[in-house]
Image (cartoon, rainbow, N blue to C red; front, side, top):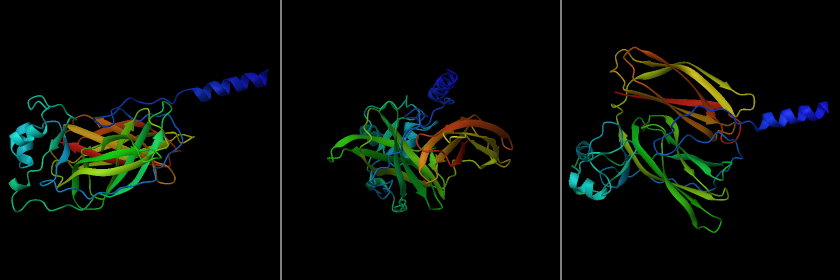
Length: 305
């Protein structure tokens, strides 16, 4: 009887859900489910050269403060052309996270237009099945250049064993940019999707920039505490905004969890508030694994004026 009671307590504890903190990871999908499940690695990887922003259509994600007229000026196209390419968009009521198609208008580009940037390599693809029959899919991008890349998007397409398309969605980064010499995954969730699929990734857009829109910040005293079973990691630390910087209206951290094999198994986006130059802000949150045990967590920070 004593052994039976102990077994019942153990089973109840094993079935208890892993607690997580609510957060928004990306503007298009909720945070990846913390329910651990077997890792599925797609066997097809397609690396497509980054298009030239001034001569190839690409997807742009609306950021806070963007206006229709400023975007038309930024991409050197007319407002009429931008409106024609996005007939469902109301120029005076654009929501943050909405996607715009930037049309081809190469004839309007000056002779000194930005040359074709170096491709943003896709160094890894992986999908993790969820308990409710869905798939979280990640494609890890590596920026090996000295430039920042903004407006990164990728088309993730899944095929069944006969080569028929199962589903296709646009995936985005957890941050607005990919800094130099940094890796970050684009991610997307496919509901009601079998695990026996093949994954293709095509880079849709990646616009090089000097990074002048971002403020100088550092992470200090970062502590990563991985749970005994490796399914969660509690992270904490401080954000420091340079005293010579402008004030920040937004701070954001992307925490990427990797297993021992170096595969992405979890992603968390933490949004902070505004900061003044020289100020420190404390952060604390949890990253959960979607697959194998977490071995390490890497961090990328972003601050915008």
